[in-house]
Amino acid sequence: MQGVVEEVEANEVRLRLRLRELVEVESPSEDKAAVDRAGELVTGWASELGGKVKRHRQRGFGDVLELRFGPTRSKAGRVLLLGHLDTVWPMGTLKSMPWRESDGKLFGPGVLDMKAGVAMALEAVAAVQSLGQERPVTLLLNSDEEVGSPVSRAITEKLARECAAVFVLEPAQGLAYKTARKGVGHFELCVEGVASHAGVDFERGHSAVLEMARLVEKVSNFTDLKRGLTVNAGVIAGGTRSNVVAAECRCEVDVRIAKAGDGARVERMFRALKVTDKACKLTVSGGINRPPMERKAGTIALFKQARRLAAEMGVDLAEAATGGGSDGNFTAGIGVPTLDGMGGVGAGAHADHEHVVAKHLVERTALLAGMIAYPAHPR
Ligand SMILES: [Zn+2]
Image (cartoon, rainbow, N blue to C red; front, side):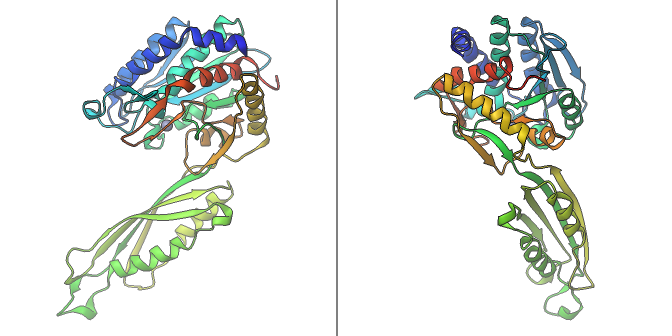
């Protein structure tokens, strides 16, 4: 790993400059033109490395970029580096949250989630090339991850199927790589009641708010902490005035599952919900969006290799599981060994204090490069 570290170190200035450049091209998921500008920037860097560019054109989102490097085949198989160009930050955020370096930290919208991961991926590919350790690599950068990957999911799954391993460029968990993620679901409950005057006509009314209160209790009881299943009724809205029996109420529910088998089961439980007050009408929509990334043999093998390579650099690499989802859930869900959290080290993703810790950039990029160059089990 010594050679890899030296190679990445030699280009550390470029890595930092590019990270700043990418952060300063704002790219909220909702703004196609903005995300495409970030895509242009990265495409230029990829072309310098001889990358073949394929644009999966989109209307509602930025184009999804498929960048291919290295030979078309090798014994070790192709690697998919999986990232996204979009951020949760609206246009203009840079004014209040500009690029800033202080105390060894790099601040800015999307710097951790996940512009650092994107800049690191290109440096990792460059390092692998310089060392003559060629391996087929696909870098897939989507434009819609922060809104659930509606257009890129199919592309991600298709490209993952031709790969031996997937390395996800999402932020590390503390200093750890992620070997498990919960699956994510989103449901919406709508209750239609019967409105009436709470004083004059109380008995003719059927309260949608009361009915929803019962339903919130029911779905919350689906939570089973031992199974890693959680249900959070996070948003509720209904009624018009306190002296009106509410005609309607709506609730948005977040569901997390740790076991793949719970997906269908939870969906059935939501579909089977019934109202207590028969005069009320319930509509349930939504479902499980991302399957869980379970800690399976393929992922464990990848992590063990990462741990070995990290040890060569004097780093004791830890392993973590998280309740948050990523595109790694999709690739793990179709059975391709996936290791996640291989991007930047820092804190505050989606928050005002979002930052990357600068001193880890070289080490983490070198580890990513090492994982491409020195696969554990050639196949
Ligand atoms: Zn992300």
